[in-house]
Image 1 (spheres, helix red, strand yellow):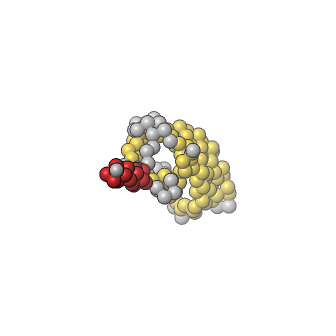
Image 2 (cartoon, one colour):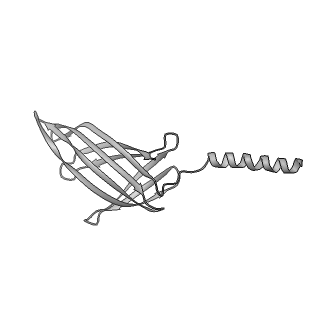
Image 3 (cartoon, one colour):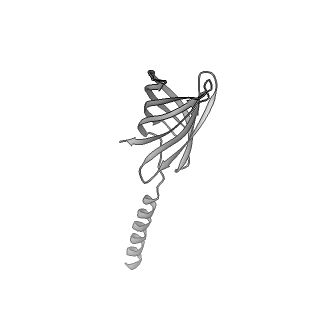
Amino acid sequence: MKKTLFLALLACVTMVFTSCNKEKELPGTSWKTHTVIDQDMSMEGITAHINMVMDATMKFTDATKGTMDMTTSGSMSAMGMTMPIDTEEETITFTYTFDGEAGTLTSTDEDGETETIPFTYNKKDNTIVISQTERDDETGMEMKFEMVFTEVK
């Protein structure tokens, strides 16, 4: 009887510790972000203020693939004038890797250019974070932003 009770207790303790350390699995999950970018950028001595809103939903469809639906809009102010930034909607398909703490999203655009973006998973907050710096090839201006995605239940 003592042996049976000990084995039952051992099984319960093992289940508790195993379930607490379970890694996050992404297949079948959806994540949303509402990100506001509000920063100054300079080009050739002219400073422009950018205010941009990015709303995105990221879906991990299986163990290696996913999609991101993104809408961006905003405005740019420079030299006393404010101009709207056209609203853009796009769906991006990607492949991904994920080790339980960090991963990469890789997509290829219509011109055949491939981009890989790293991300991290914050277990405590159950968030996915993408920190990135985008550089405009024409102007050379850089925009830094951080997108924090929360899981849609």
